[in-house]
Image 1: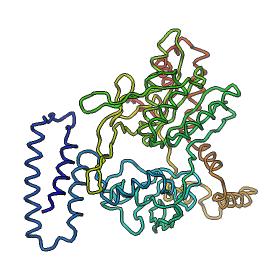
Image 2 (image 1 turned 180 degrees about the horizontal axis):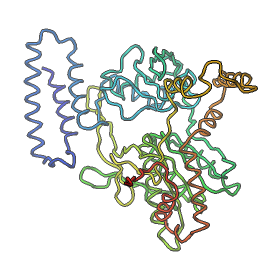
Image 3 (image 1 turned 45 degrees about the horizontal axis):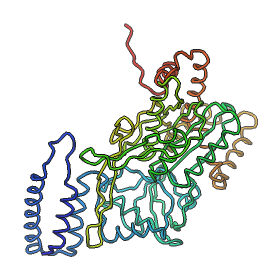
Length: 491
């Protein structure tokens, strides 16, 4: 019997069987030890019987790894087992010697899922250049199906040495056949921030797709540029931002908050504070102007911490009579709700366990775990029509769908121009594609409307805009956005 593996499993059990969900009764140390002892005895018996009686066991190590994996996966969605191969690749990728293809993936995926949903692609990165698009679903990596594969395993398979090729097969909406691509791994440029000036409403727009040291420098540069001329408001876009370096999020918070402001803490299962993070620099943002932050269901982890702590500080500061102001408003849909912290713990045999060990807490002891951040103004994203809807709209319900319909003068020339624009799409640089996408973005447009409403109300009824909560209430009364309407039948 492989007692080394059993002792490894026992170690993992002892390290991770630390608490239950709040809705369950807390397990004492003595009870946990008894459960572990009974469980290991049962497992050892099953292990012995299977090795003695099963007609053929082809790979004993894989069986053990799968048992440990299932146990850790059962604890919570973010805990997992890193076998020798996966752990080795993960160590190599963090050393900076290995490279990727530049994709942002769906954090909600489980091992049961047969696909890996692409939320976004890094602009002009290998995946973007090869033709992968947001909402594509990867079904195969280097000839291996994703069914039963953890997300960590999938990520490490996608990454590899620079200039090597990974073969990807993916599903795409409106395509009956699989998309098959050979993508060359390379350095993924940190195109994680973008700034536009919206001339008509006189508003600056800054997007941030991930948190890194470079992102802090970029957003600081963009904020300084925005100070070169007077403007009405700043829009900070954190949609599809799945996080990154917590230190970067704290540094970015320092661009808006006074030095020494509390951002977030981590606490263990007993509620004891492990780490406490505060800003360490002087702010540079113009806090006399409103800042509207765009969030959605893929705004996660460090991005939620930034949005949440700025909102809380804004509420506190707006109630102070003579203190500094910070006018933060959140627009979009509820954020992801990733408020847990994972540690990677080596457990011998060149493998490791990724285990949830603590939770993030915002100011006022607010946890975002499974709750997320609720926007002040609910605005759901309008998705582009599917191929089926486009086809239906083209051939039904309009005059131009009729046979031999009467064409307007110059219509043929206009259609030819549209075809040429479509053909030239692939030649456009990322900044131009981003600009065109934002021009059709309903959440961005609604944010601009809310900014105009804010200034309109500030000029006409300033007494109703004294605190942040007062402003949210009044603007919600004026703008319907996507909040539910209460309808009462009149008989």
